[in-house]
Length: 75
Image (cartoon, rainbow, N blue to C red):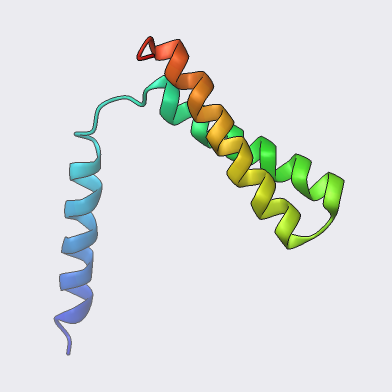
């Protein structure tokens, strides 16, 4: 079992090195992330529950994706 840390370390190094190959995020992707965070904060402030936070995050992600998608000129 002494090989397990080396296997995990090499797997982690491979994942980290390949993650640099991805393309830069689009406005739709950024809008989804920003919208989810903002929606979660607003949902928690308005409803004060986990359901409000999750619902706000989902609604914010949807709205942010749509706005970012329009900024990308896809629609």
